[in-house]
Length: 172
Length: 309
Image (cartoon, rainbow over all chains, first blue to last red; front, side, top):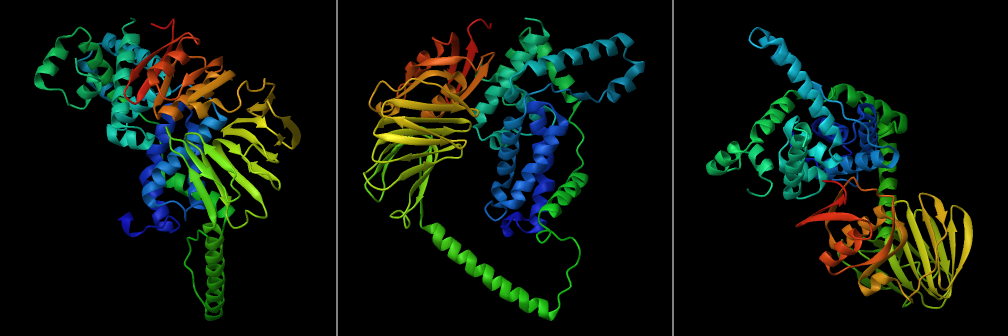
């Protein structure tokens, strides 16, 4: 669907298109920043309710950053940051069991634990940028757009995130 | 090595020579391993369809007319009624737009301030990142200005003049005063005459040379100003025992810059002044009394606690 031809968020098809296109990314982005799945889900739902209520005032092009800003603000207003626990898909590792020794698997799990801890120690913005890029595959420009900062600022966050992760994992 | 080279590396933006040099470093293997491990990470589950259904349930509870999923069968009398209703809605909308268009709004961006004269010659000076609005048409009857941000008022003598913010209201007769409202921060300083502050339903009179401050709904006793106008009129930002958080936010507004902090206690109180024109000087004025160090890079600045490595 081409949203340019439907410049009214009040139309249900436009609204549902926007929801399907953006709600997941916004939800995960908020989760990576603050670490509570349930609350992240709730603030995103609330933000879309707000979007619907103000549908006449928000253009489809602005809707994504509108919802993200509201969800982010709502989160900041009521809640404090919590730990981000990442899940790993280790099926690839375990399938290779014939080639990989049990020591290797154990070591890899330990490494994941260290990485998790290091991620939790990162500033919110850096953790969010890192995970949006690495897990969600978002480009720097897309993250910059969502956060309302320059691409250079995102590159800086990414650089610092990776640098700090390594320093913590290597125990420097 | 190149600035932000790790970010460039992930984006395949390093040249062959740069990449080769990077691979030579002792850290390369660790970086590589982090990227491999993070590739196996999975985001939390999210079901678009279920989430949308849940949202629809919420919306239908609020407003049934707006979102209907069933098929609408129209009948003639209903259609006529709809036409009348639509005409009425249109008329209301047009008149609403007409009334609204009489609303005057003046706003400033970050790193910007402006002076505006009201219809009765009262003067308003807006600090960076602020907005005021008022009704030009009804000005003779009601002198009310809504404010988001910070502004200094020089009020012409006349009927009651008031400034409305989300957190509280300020009423005055001819006088000069400053109002700042940002998120949960509400401060009023009276420089001349007398103002009355209404905060959470409690009224308080503020004579010349005194201030009122409330943060997060709590009234905090403060000393009055020691100048005859707010410091920002002289391109400076002054603070007396104000949480560092608000100081850094003001810094962001004055220089249109993004501030990040690491291991910094944002609730520690800051007393001091920073320049609104000289960034380097301002950074030093903020960092040294708070025992912070900083790292300035274009439109970004990061503050660290002095004892972090």
